[in-house]
Amino acid sequence: MGMQPVAIALVGDYDAGITAHAGIEKSLQLASAAPAAAKLVWRWLSTPQLAAGVQELIQHDAVWCVPGSPYRSAAGALAGIRAARTRNIPFLGTCGGCQHALLEYARNVLRVGEAEHEEETPHASLPLISALSCSLVEVENEVSFTPGSFVRRIYGTAQSKESYHCRYGLNPRLEYLFSGSDMEITGRDNNGEARAFEIRNRRFYVLTQFQPERSGLIGRLHPVIAAFLQAAREQKVRSS
Image 1 (cartoon, rainbow, N blue to C red):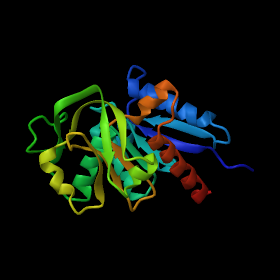
Image 2: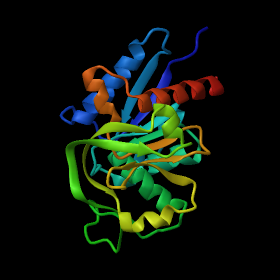
Image 3: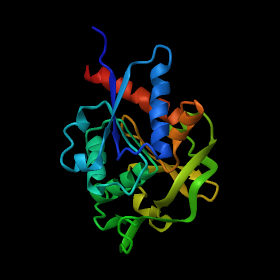
Image 4: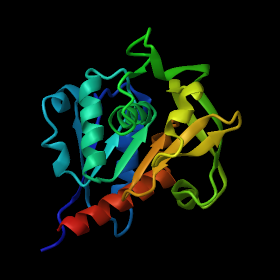
């Protein structure tokens, strides 16, 4: 009997009108169509669903927290992220997913309980995720990767031009909270602002402020997504 399909949980509130969601579907279809690729299945798990429980999520081989915030239930998104992190399930967070993964880590690992997302709590005393000084809606720019980092190995190059659609990101004034933690900043843009993150002692835990899924819309499987899906396949083998 062959291996069961590799199952990907997509954490977010699916909307066919969101460009990133269309890109995610296309990227996963591209990966499925590749010669000798393991069969992929994916399921969108709404954030209110996850607020009620993560039992379905933890049955998957990998978790992707997707763009599209503010989510219908921020608590649900955070619950899904925490479940993936604490169970060492391969995890990818892009754009809003990246922002909420940083928030989850700050609250539950760094014990900064007052950390908030400014989009959801406009007058927060500690806006860990704050409005960007320059909006990155429909913007492309260069990201430079830290030598020796996992993301640098994924790309095989020191820099890459990436696409964005976001108005919020890690507050530069609060970057110091992550200093010395397992959550490392491993990609920065031309202004020195944090744009990629990883936890290197995990099977796969990568966050990008940019949207690699947009590559799927032009028929290209982004290297970050390819590496994520490879980690999912390895997780499937490990659990079989």
